[in-house]
Length: 152
Image (cartoon, rainbow, N blue to C red; front, side):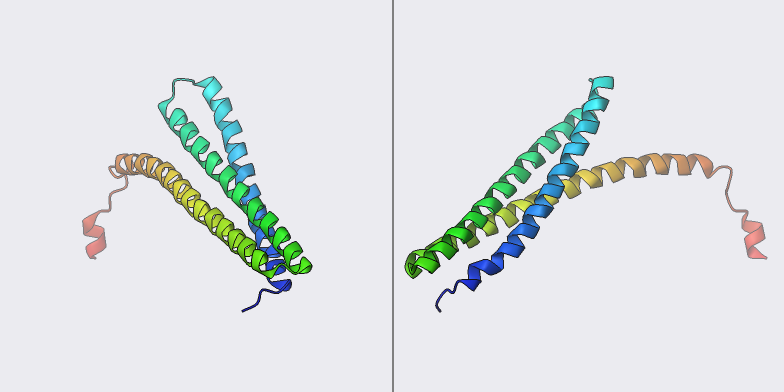
């Protein structure tokens, strides 16, 4: 199969959308970090905030790497198109493979970041569930159903 000029051009829109998604993740993480920084200044000894900061630092590094490999993939697509335009099809094929490989690495890093993000959210939910269950059990005393009324 011969690589045509339109083949790497098709990746432009996909890579651009991925870069937009990665940038949105970066902005969301930046907002969380700024909020945690304010909380940390108020209560610097909080172990939960320190753990969240470490988690966010790891996610920030992953997002940076996702963007790096995405940009590299984009650049390789441009180089591939130039090589195809100049008639260097063998080199263009290898550059296209490098572009696809870089895009694959970017997506795999994205998958890891999503897993970390999901774990962090599940921890937050479990904390809220524990508080809710404690409240619910203390109110059960007042709102127990009367078994005699239900039987009638």
